[in-house]
Amino acid sequence: MKQILTEETFSSPQWLKIICYFFGLLLAITGFNLLIQNDFAQEVVFLTPLLLLIVVSMFMYTRLKLTISNTDIRFTGGLKQYQFLWTDITRIDMKMVGKYQTPVCILYYGEKSLELNRGFYLKRQFNRILSLLEMKVAPEIFSRQYQTIRRHLI
Image 1 (cartoon, one colour):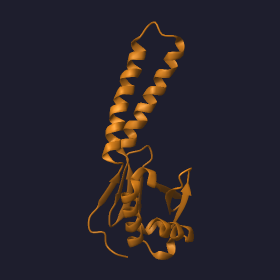
Image 2 (image 1 turned 180 degrees about the vertical axis):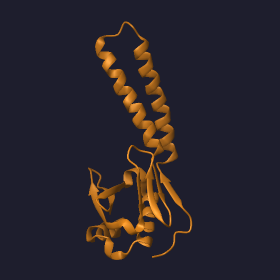
Image 3 (image 1 turned 90 degrees about the vertical axis):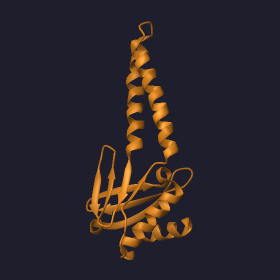
Image 4 (image 1 turned 30 degrees about the vertical axis):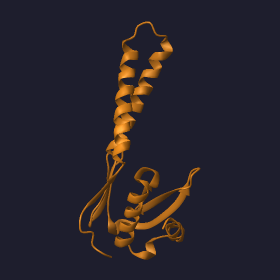
């Protein structure tokens, strides 16, 4: 197991954050304008909380961060926070999901698991995350399916 010299942080791409901020602000303004209007039907009142829930979700999505250091792994920014040591990892698996067969890496630690989706991190960052995992974790912890899919990704 090698040492990770610097703490690395992975998040969604900057262009995606800008799009989320722009459309989140646009949806928030639309929601508040719907509340101010008096001559709309009652059905519109039920649409406003839905728009504001989407806005909150978009802003939370931009705050998600995966931090990998030499001592631990932290996933912050969402409703559920993850933090665990490298020694806590019991198994690492990978599967392909969805119509476009997007790889998802699953880290099992204790009774819990953390899923890392390539759709969120994009290809270069996802490959860097996998290489850091392979550098710090013993090879016998990786499942056979992980190794098969990883060879396919390379």
